[in-house]
Length: 126
Image (cartoon, rainbow, N blue to C red; front, top):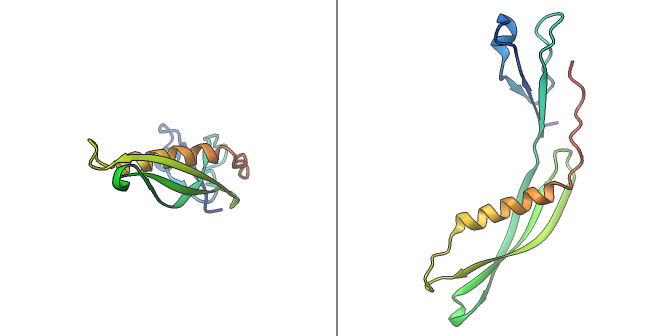
């Protein structure tokens, strides 16, 4: 699967394993020599995307909420979605719209949604 990443944690004292330490792959990494006991750790990567738009309020519509539909694609291909609304405040009312704050909030919400993804149990790597 493309959404699972393997990293070889080679022993730096072994020339063969040390040379492979930190190597990553989307396939299980075979051991470089017989009797190798170096572990390979795995990481399951979830992704998210969002769509949305502004819902204005306040004087002359200078304030707005960003209403978003967040879709998390889990490492195994399943999808989980949720709606959220972020109050972006009022432009010209003492503060500028901070898009980085909005992206941070969307990322945090997506991470929370991703908690519902299946456990990451890729094939055992020996």
